Length: 76
Image (cartoon, rainbow, N blue to C red):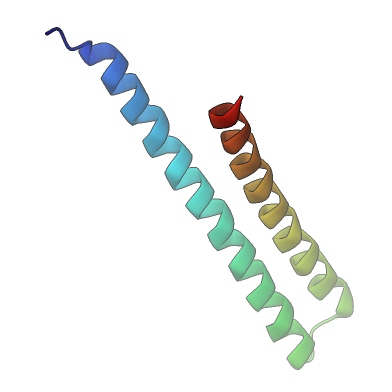
């Protein structure tokens, strides 16, 4: 039995980067939503709340797109 260590390392590296990237993107979305609610509750401007909420929704959409693409790669 022969193990291709380079391919195994490549898969590990790509998986690690993708996992950290998706978790980071989702975390940014959660932080954006919390900043949006903090801005609405305080004396902040409505524009900054809109930007924070829009950025959060963009982060969540990118996460959903990445997960959908992963499912597509597995199924296809």
